[in-house]
Image 1 (cartoon, one colour):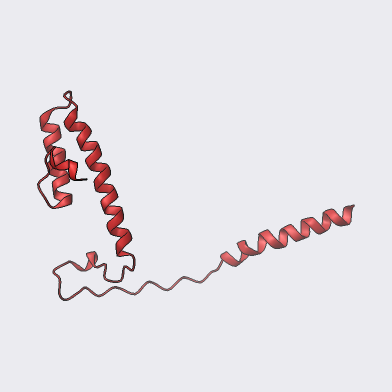
Image 2: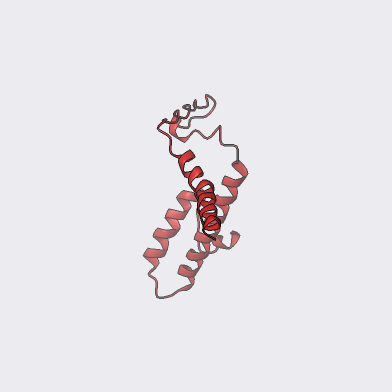
Length: 110
């Protein structure tokens, strides 16, 4: 009975301790190569995403975020208790993100 317990303890130590030991290294990973800015665009170098392989995912995430913001703004537009100045300020902020002039009526596009 004690040999089984010893075997189980030894086996569990081998299985669970070895991945932890493998993760602990003193080596510092090499820094990622700096991306080169695209010559054809006037984007600053820190906005370069030419090496981003999942552009469709990024566009889907942006569309989902815009839709969520539009839903919140539609609630603001429908609520008479919220001041017009507050709603206009939020619409102006959302317009900066979308690149078009947003109104309570245009939020239905999302």
